[in-house]
Image 1 (cartoon, rainbow, N blue to C red):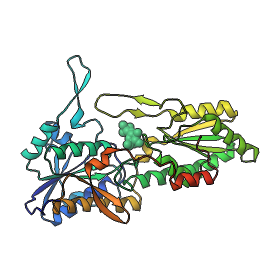
Image 2: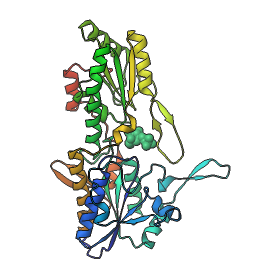
Image 3: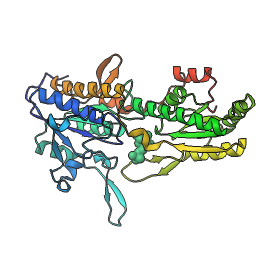
Image 4: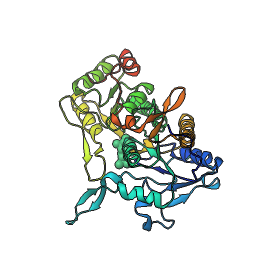
Length: 371
Ligand code: F6P
């Protein structure tokens, strides 16, 4: 940690990657905490595009944040700054000579732009990709403090990310609703949820919403095991089943379902729910329906847990700067908010441990995990 720096005048905040409920709560908390200290605070539009493509923005891509500007936004989903998962400055997509997309490193240019605008420090709010960028910018000398966000909860270095609780709560509510219709029609309903390569959303909502089978990337599944679970329920008079499938789940010895791979962005997952539903219908002979929750999990008002966590993180990020901490990410280590080096957050993905209590609970409840 450096000595507290009392020369801070102007800081910036940006939101990057997929949006998550709670982003606006972080922006508001960081803004109020910065203004409280007499600093100016600016929001960068659309990840880093506000700086990198400033000529495309009427306000030069930087939005001055004021008390009035952040009034009444804590409960709103989305981000007032905008976000993108296609503007990674380390692998920025541009059109190549033959019209194809190629990736270029624009991080040095970005660091220069920060200095040009007289920005003393940056609060980078985002998931694994954003923390990787934040870490690279910190290594180039920029004063960066990261704030972990993602509905996927796959960031290491923090007990939980904000956005996750809202996604799990919504998925659970959907499972509650699907129970009655599945039971009325004696159907199998497969529910595909986001989560990328980690099964946190599927696992937690599946247990909370009393699913009969939960398929997660951490446990390659055997579809016959799931079909047998459905048949077993039929035999015991429960003639409907709910199956939660994480988008990153894959069959034993098989592949993940990938929608697309493009330059400058992470691969898009999706489609596994359709495969599972079709196979279950064939194997069990039962009418099967598919519900893909997709981006619904990212929208809506943050739960009170996420609002609180997001505001604690936003305020802690400003405190970090005031205390002279740089190259760190704000992290929840219950009950405390602490700081961990940015590299720790990006060194490994946080997947669901196979021996964690939620998995043990699922097994004790007789939920099929496909293995
Ligand atoms: O990381 C958040 C997330 O919502 C993932 O769960 C999902 O795979 C991905 O983003 C979808 O991103 P996009 O905004 O490109 O559809």
